[in-house]
Image 1 (cartoon, rainbow, N blue to C red):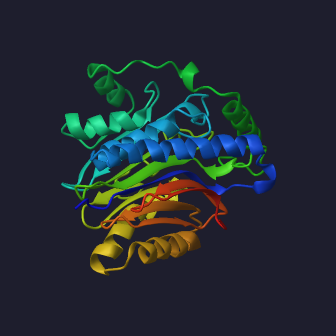
Image 2: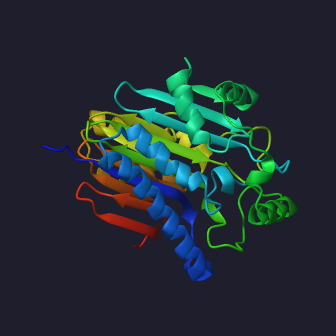
Length: 313
C-alpha cells in the first residue's frame, strides 16, 4: 500500500493588494507557484525523499524574479544581494543553513550541502561561499540578481529611511519576501526548506528567521514540517516553527490548531505579521497567515492542486 504524500510551498506573506495586481503579473506569479509545487510533487510521486522535493520546489522560486529569494532578492543598503536559506530533514533532525551569501545562484542547494557534506549546521558569508566553491559551485556575479524593480524599491526606502515600504508601487511591496516548501514523502519522512533575500535596505549583515532552525524552518518525522514567512525579527523571538512543532508534540494539537494559535496569538500581538505552511505526519497541509495574503500552493494526499494568493480565498 502506498503511503500518503503531499507538499506545500509559499512565496511570501504580507500586504498583497488586489487593486495593484495586474492580470499579467498575477498570471506569472500563479504559474511560478504551480511550477514550484509540481516540481516537488514529481519527486514525491517517484518515491523520492521529502528533502529533495522541497529543495527542488524552492529552486523554482529562487530562479524567478517574482519572489524575494535567489534571482529576485532585494538589495541591501550597499546595493548588494545577501541571501539566507535553510533545510531540515525530520528523520534524524538533520539541518543545514547559510546566511549572508552573495554569489550563490541557489542558496537552498548550499544549505542542503551544509547539512549533507559538512559537520556544521549554519555557515555564513565568505566562509559559506568558500565551502561552496570547494564543492564546485559556480561563482555567480551580483549582476545576475539585479532587477530594476528591486533597485527602485531600494531608492524609495533610502529616500524615506525605511526598512518597510509605506507606500506601494507593486501589489506586494509590503510583503515579507521569503519562499519555502514542506513535504511528506512515501517513506514517512518530513522535510522543510526556506530561502530569502531578506529585507530591502538592510544593514550590518542583518539575518532574519529564514536561516534559523526552529524559527524559520523545522521538520520532525511523525510530527510536522514548517516553513515560515514574515517579519524575521519577531519570528526569531517567538521561535515560530519550533513552537508549532512543540504544541503538536506536547499538547497533541493538530496542525491547524497549532499553526493558527501561533500565527494569530502572541506573535500577532507583538506586531509579527506573516504566515507559515505546515504538513503533518499524515500529509495534512495547512496554510496560516495574519496578513492580507500569502503566495502559496499545495498538492494534497489525494493529488488535488490548489494555488492561491489572498487570505480570503
